[in-house]
Image (cartoon, rainbow over all chains, first blue to last red):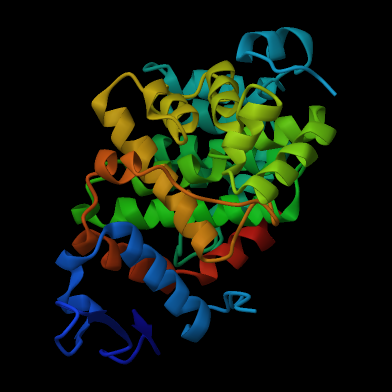
Amino acid sequence: MLLGHRANPRGAMIVLARDSDAAVETRPLADALDLIPPRAVAEALCMQERLYGVVGLKPPDLS
Amino acid sequence: MIGRHTIDSLLDEIVTLPSLPASVGFITQAINDPTSSLADVARAVETDPSISLKSLRLINSAYYGLPHKVNSVDHAVSLLGIKVIRNLVYTATAVDTFQRGSEELFRHSATCALLMRSFAQTPASGLGIDPDEAFVYGLLHDVGKIILIAYLPDEMQNAERLSRTDRLPMFEAERRIIGVDHAELGGRLAQKWGLSEELVAALAGHHDLNLCRQQAQRKVAAILSISDFICNSCGIVSTPSAYYDIADDMWDAAELTSRKLPPVIDRFFGSWALIDDFLAMAS
């Protein structure tokens, strides 16, 4: 998962590797919701808000 | 240090659940009595100055967004109706209760309340309860923690330590150290207070769906658990150093697909300012 600003339609992308030889494919999260479980969607949206959002959530400690 | 308990032995020997203020019982009775008029309900609310004041502050807060200021309980009851007043009284009572707990716990509970309201305001989520009622579910979901922290502070510190070191959710650490978790205790408190069977089941079952007897109750309890998890994922935690997680069965029981979540979470972040308004109103 690649995260950026929520206002950007490509602000949350999932990276798909179909098999070990193929090039990776990226898709906006909104277009790939059926490929990932709801827990991952919730965690991605919360992390995106913590990193780039406007409501003032405390950023995660990534150290 | 105490030994491990069952919920009944804990309640018999150590914990005395606080009573609902007599005035709230009186108000609930007036609300539930089909022969009561709106004026009767208003008079019942007015018997408790603290609940009256908090109710008026809530009504005039951004949460309700009314165009005109409401200056009397009588006016509030006639304007908003009995159902809203009932949730208002429960909310004001919960605020009173949370003033005995930590600031983190109150903020986490208010945030979970707003998220439950967002679920209820998004029909596709399938929560199927009134948004004000959903707010009360979120606000009260961790009320059992206040009791455990008040009566068993050392055991709760040990549970927090165990949660952190063994990467166990707090409710699991409570079960191992105390024998009972905050959710089941919160359900008992709601039962003692005479709150609805649905609310009792949701509070008790939000970490153990087996405590819900009906399918509809399991669904609400699961959405409450997911709201709790999302608040934790946002960094709004009730127990700062504890580990958090959610059981996989909650997602199935909630019948929430990945497509249903983004509109709820968008609505939640979009109304975020209400949390600070609510906390300021309650302080």
